[in-house]
Image (tube, rainbow, N blue to C red; front, side):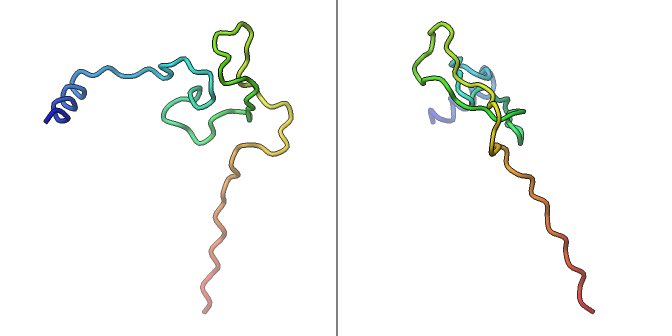
Length: 86
């Protein structure tokens, strides 16, 4: 009963959450929602420490200089369908 009441109240006048409510610098919070197929234009690497929030000049992510293997999944092209044998 409490669940149903809470759900109805939330649907009618619940506030919409912001994109990054914790002001996190981690990559998963930097992409838009809903997620697109390619999250970043270039691959990134995590270079910061997980607990250096608030430190002046701290950097958490940066673009990769020259990626040897990109993080982007290769495009899958379907194989051609062979013609039926007569």
